[in-house]
Length: 364
Image (cartoon, rainbow, N blue to C red; front, side, top):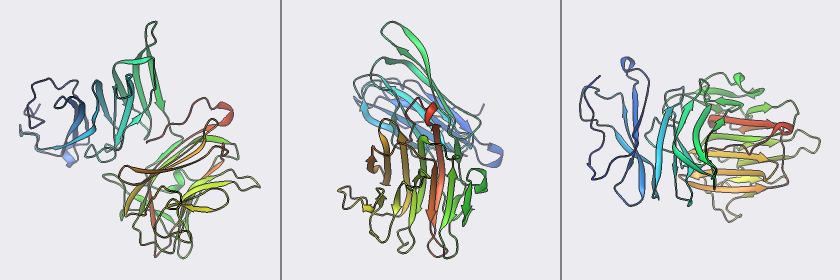
């Protein structure tokens, strides 16, 4: 063991409850990451904080890492957190329970930067029976595979439960697109822009044509989730970007969102099946901005289609279509040599309709 590390700058009068720690990487290659997560009782509402050290001086007792919070001031009772690195040694998953809704329910968050910052958290259990004890999270050998174990009190007694996230595929976009996509053209992994801490992204560029990624599911109707990030530098005033779903029927029923310059060059848009609609005119005011943007599209038999676009930090525009209840293909297309787009960290989770028993998970 190296020297004892002091992880936070201000001693508290109360205990830091349930400290958890995770390690990834290799200190001999300068790629070691250590993250500790804990509750901070500095205010009446509890915060969950993390202390992160990326390849620091492990013999120095003063940990000079980065401090950040996962959630802040939303609950008066918390159990957890529990944290775990993904197989790539960069993404970090966190799970805990808190009482912000009036009941003790599970919440999760993910960091794509080794714990340096965190995405908005997501509630994954609802109402009663309540969760008991600290939940535990583990990641599988494949990217995107997550399991969470916890105890629930049904009022009759306490029993163990688990929730799984097992994507159909997870594409970090570091390698050959043929691994996950049936059809692709004008797409290549590049270091020019990439989401997260390390790696590559897919550059969509195909001469004067659009780059394209297409994933087909054999013509079989599906429910599920498409979750990805795209990079926009707002300089693409000619080339469009479309991210969406197709039912592959003679009707050609398509729903999608992205950049449609004919509709507007200044705001993101969605396609409702008959026309492109600017979120500006739809009272959601989603202006284009430079940087990575998070997209989640879900389809299930209960709510139909829901689209989410995080167009700036924690600002989300949505659009729904309850009549769109199935799809057979997903696609991403757009860009050119002069005006490329970039796509990264694609997670797809689908269920054939006859075996679908649950609403798909999302990262929001």
